Length: 131
View (tube, rainbow, N blue to C red):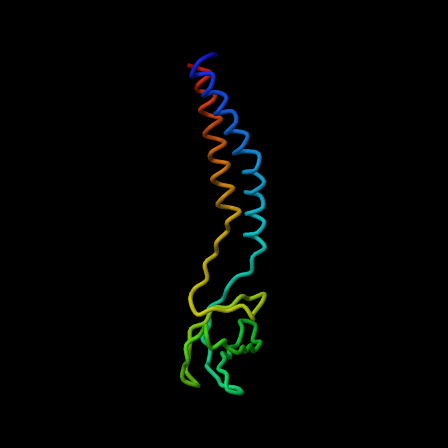
């Protein structure tokens, strides 16, 4: 093939390699990260005060008690004894937030994009050879 078809074939083959070679390992890495990630639990925490700082106190799903002091610049001042909806990491209870956590997995997203691009380029390359 010469002319525009030949140039298109080279571009499609290059895109196939550029998409599939890094895309498949990124998918595998993303799946491993997703499987190893700890779950976040939702609970009700009580606001307490200690030494001029406010904090949250809650009990975990297994009955364990957890407490943490808040950074005044990150958490608004609340009434002591108030009940707050709290989300915490079950493997690392010191990781908590007041809003539901986002489970972004950038490796999985990039893997899907690259693998999809590689597969589409491969199919388009085969179609170019057929016609």
